[in-house]
Length: 562
Image (tube, rainbow, N blue to C red; front, side, top):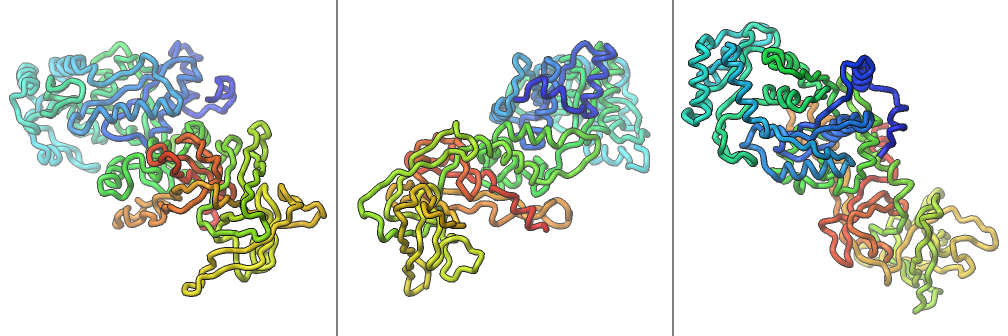
C-alpha cells in the first residue's frame, strides 16, 4: 500500500481537487465516502476502480469510507454475493472498519421518508401498469402526460401505501411515485417510481417487507443518513443527480451529500456489463465467476494478479470526466511491473522433447546452482538436479535451422541454463510420423555453470528440466477472453461471436524443476523465457501442481496490431 506522503505528491484529479477545496474552505471538516455495491453478482475490474477511488480518498485524508450494500431487490440478491464482495474489498487492501452498512438497515427510515413525501403532496400511488406508464412517460422530444391518479389526496395515498405495505395488492398493481414534473426534459424527473411491490424473501429482513424502495430514492437517503460528504458515481448516474438533490431538498434533510460523477472503466478485449458476464457464466462459456479469464476480481485473484498490481493500474489510468478506452495492455503491464522484481525464477518445460547426453555418466545426479532472481541476490539460489536425460522445449530444436536460429540443431552448441554447454550430435525420429522423438548431445564437462574456460562464445541459452527428477504438472495458458478489441462495437453481432477460442489452452504433460513442488498454492513465479504463472489454489493436487499463466513476458498482442 502506498504511503500517505506518496499519495499526497501526486497531481490531484478533479474529484480530489473538489474535496481539497471543500476542506480548505471549511465546507467540510472531514470527508466521508462510500462504496455501494448491489449484492446480486461478483465484482469486476470496473468496480475495482471505484473501490480504489473511494477507499483511496479515505486513506489520503485519514478518514473513513463506508461499505454499503444496496440490497433493495431481494429477487436477485444473495448472501454469497455479500461475502464475496467483502472478500474482494479486503483482498484489494482496504478495510471499512466499523462502517459496514446495508440499505436494508434503513427500511424503516425510508418508509417514514416516503410517508413524509406523501403527506406533503410530493408523492402519490399510481395504478398504471408498466406498459401504460411507458406510454404516459413521453419521449426525449415529447413531454409526458400526468397519470390519472396523480391528483389523489394525501389521505387516500397514505391509505393505499399502507395497504401496499400490508401485502393487500399484487406485484405491479400499485407503485409510489414522486410528484415532480411530467414535462421535464430529464426523463428521470418525470414522476419516477420510488417504491414498488416485491413479494420476495429478503436475505436479511426475511418476509418483513413486501414493498421495497427504488435505488434513486434509497441511495441519496442512505448517503444522508450516513453523513456521506461526497457521493462518487460513474457517469451513467449524471442524469440521476437532479432526482438525488430533489429528494433531499424536498425532505429538507439536515445533511446534503454532493454527488460527483466520473468516467467508468472501459477496457479493451472484454465486456463490463454485469448482464453479459452473467450470460457467459450461465451459458458455460467460462468455468464460473472465478474463471481466470474473467476480469472479475475473484477471477483475477485466481489467475494470479496481485492487489498491488490492480491498485497501481487504477492509479495509472486516473479519474476523468469523459469516457475513454483503456488498452488491456495497460492492465497486463501493471502485473508484469509488479511481479518482475519479486517473482522467483524457475524452469518449466511446456512441450517436452527428450535430450540424451551420451557422454554423461548413467547414474549421476549432479546439483547445479540457479539464481532465484537475476537482479536480486538476496533472493538466494536453489539447487537444480542435472541428469543424463533432460527435457527441453520442442521449439528449441530444428532439424534444418536458419542462420539466426541460436538454439539446438545438428552440430549446434547451446548453453543449458545454469548447467553445461551441449552440442547436438544426432536425433531420433518416429518412422511413421517423421516427428523428432529425442536428441542426442554431448556435453563439455569443463563448462559447468554455462561458461567455457577457453572463452568460446555461445549465443543460445535454453531452459531444461531433468527427465528423472522433474515433476509433472498441468499448465493452463490463459489469454484474453475476446479476440476483438471491442466485442460490443457491432450491436448487430452477438458479442459471444468474438470469444477467443485460444483463451484457454490446457497442457497436461508439462515438466517442472522439483523446487516447484515446495511452493504453496497461490504462489507466483516466472517460468524463464515463458511468462508469469500462479499455482492454482483450487485445482492443484499434492505432488502435481496446476499452473495458471498470469501474463506473458511481453505484450504479444501489441505486436499483432502493428
